[in-house]
Every structure is written in structure tokens, then in C-alpha cells.
Image (cartoon, rainbow, N blue to C red; front, side):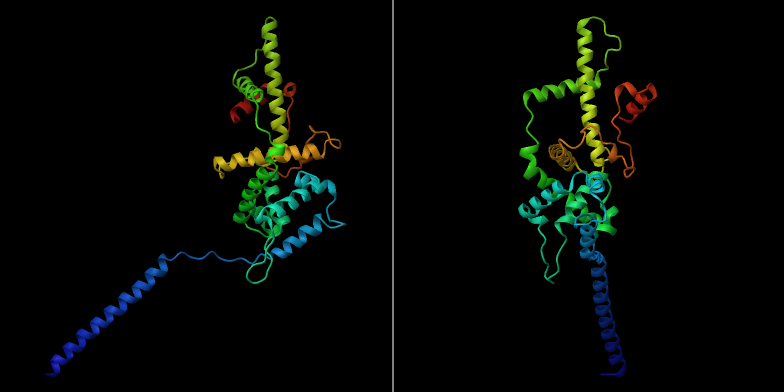
Length: 289
């Protein structure tokens, strides 16, 4: 074989090898580009978060007194501990477990605190990351599991099913909401209708106002939640409210929620009396609705 033929063969082989190598490299690059990136791991020192929470609120001599605990957790400490104990004993998600490295996971106190703080202040989980040492996605998961657990464990006792009378009252309330009251009722029939209508409207406004004052998540925008989760959040707030009322029945005025108006939420939640509402306020509320 002549030298020219040998050179042509070598050149052809080199081109084939180069093509194979290029195809291999391209395949690796494409695979890495399409491969989902792992989420960056952040070491949050969750043990530090638990210890700080414990020292601030649950030791014999906590940093913050009971009245601040009640304002920030919306309930007294014994009731909160009762809920934590019940959830940690009945619901696997709230049971603290060790991972493969023998390290403890988040405590039930951290998970319940994250859920209740989100209900109380209506803020995202990122707000409590530096203190409780858990991120937004973990906080949202805590809230979802918390609402499921509260409804499952306490719903039958503190959230009864509506009766026929309850449904009729809801219909009456809906009518009083969309139909304006008679400004100058003429005759006994019209006066009786206006009286019942105003009474129903007042009851609903006060009840919902108290719920909003205690749990800011009820009055804040709910675009980040779907309908099913919104329903669970509402039922959970009602259940917790009924538990708190039962626990504090003889110690606090149930309609007084001024201590929760600490400026820690973005909107006011005052319970407004109808006689104190002016025309400008009415127009503003109607526009907001």
C-alpha cells in the first residue's frame, strides 16, 4: 500500500474517532443540562431553634411571661401544651424521630409553633426561619399537617355539624347581607323585619370579627392556598377558637380582643359597632368587599 493511501486511511480514522468523541461529550453535556438540579442544602441548626423556643417560653423561668405567650400563641400555655402532646402522641408527623445519621428532626414544639404563628399572623413561613430554623416549604407542610390533625382529633368535639336551624339562620344572614336594611321601617311588620335583620348581621360581624382578631390568616389574602386548604384553615381556626373559649371561659371577656391588636399584623381587625360606622366607612367597606 502506497504512502498516500495510508495517509488517507489514517485521516479517515482520525475523523471517525473525533466524531465519536464529540458525540460522547455532547451527550454528557446534554444530560447534565437536562438533569434536575438538587436543591441547595442549608444547615439551619434546628436543635438551636428548639432550645431557643424552649428557653423563651417553656422553662420554669421563661424569657417571656404568660401574657406575652397568650398574645403570640393566641391561647394559654397549658392549652398549647395539651395540643402538642395530643398531636405528638396521635399523629406520626409530629413525632420527633432520628434520621439515618442519628440526628433528631424538628420537634413537635417547633412544628406546632410554626403552624399557629402562621394562623395567628397570616405571614409566610420564611418569617420564622431565623427563629424556628425551618424554611417556608417546611412551615407550609407543618400548617397543612396541623390543620388535618386538629380537624381529625378535635373536630367532632368542637365543630358540630350544622342543624336545619343553623342552615336556615345562614340563609337569613345571607339575606341580611345582600338586602339592605329598611332605613325607616313603617308598621310593626317592617320594624320586626329590620330588627331581626340587624341582629343577624351584628352577630355575624362580631363573631367573624373576633375570629379575624385572633387569627389574622382569616382576613389576609388567600391566593396561595387552594379551596380545600382554605376550608381546612377556616375549620381549624373555628375549632381552636372554641377550644380557647372553653379554656378561658371564666377568666377573660370573650368579646375583648384588643390585646391581640399589637401591630404585628398588616391590617386592622377591630370589631366595629354598627352605631359607630359613618357613611365614609360604609362606602370604604363596601368597596373592599
